Structure formats: structure tokens, C-alpha cells
Length: 227
Image 1 (spheres, rainbow, N blue to C red):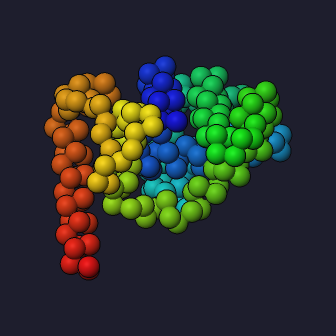
Image 2: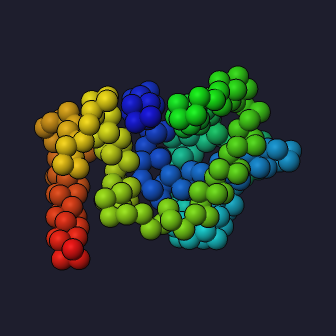
């Protein structure tokens, strides 16, 4: 799954970057949920004001942050204006990446229980997205646990390109590897090459690495005291 996410980023880095932090990820799913729900009811699409209301309603971001996010998506043609009103619709590239995103998740579920969700979805993604995206999107933005993830997860998800960095660490694990003393080795090295791959500064990437180590040390110390 992590390798699939990285492949999507390489194919369309500007579009994939919209999902690279937890806040943007939630804004995307909120907007897509509203768009597909409107499409199912015969509506035109998503509006700037509608995204702002969703962001405030679910505590994802301020109205101004949601507006800035909407404007960025429009500027880089992640969404496109439709008709003469204020509505926008996802671009063909955005829908392609979204189809890949759902396909990857469904494929992982299939690997667990041997079913064929992914093949069924990929056979008619446009129709099924109108049913899946509203339910999945609104479930995600309504899940309180997503706003309070564990300390290791938080380090990456609320930082710039943090989700991509986390995917890169996971993608670098050897398939079938067995953890040793609770750890697994990844092939990520050095930090400079990791930063360059995602257009980040070495300092920014290093800060996330240091934060991860620091958090692990604090948790280990707390565990020792408890024991």
C-alpha cells in the first residue's frame, strides 16, 4: 500500500501533495464526500463556501484555511470550475488518483480475507465512487480518533509531507522481515536523499526524524517507570 501511495505521488506530485498532511487529507475527503453526494442527487459539484462550512462543522480547520486550500486546489487544476456558478468538480487526474487510492485499500482488505472487492470496484469506479466516497469521507471526518492519533503517528501526519515520509519508511521495509527487539530496518538513507525525493529541506526532514526518536525515548522511559 505504501509503495502504491508513493507511485501516485511520483505520477502527480502536485495533486498527491494535497493528501500529504492529516488536515489536508481530511479536507480532501470532506470535499469529495460533498461532491459525490451532490452528484448522486443530480447537483453540480462542490463550492468554496460548502468546504468552509464542512471544515468548521467537523473541526478540521478554520474557514479561511479551508478557503485557501480550495483556492490552491483550483489554481493547480486539482478541481475544475463547472458551468457559470461557483461549483467545481474533480479533474480527470484527481479522479484517477482517487480510484487508485480506493483500489489500494480494497486490495489490502482482499489480501486479508481472500475476497474480490478491488476487482469489483475497478470494474466500475465512477458509479461506485458516488456511493463509497460520501460514506467513507464523512465517516473519516467524524471519527474523533483521527484527531487524536498516537504520538508516533502525530509526528508525521501533521507535518508538511509527513504522510509521504511515513510511506517511504514503510515502503523501505523488506517484505517478510521479522521485527527484532520491536524494531524493523528500512532502506531509507541518507536523510538528504529522502528530503530531495519530496522537495523538502534537509532540516525539515531531520526535525521529524529527531522528533520520532525523542518521542520513542520518552515513551520507553514512561513505560519503565510504570513497570
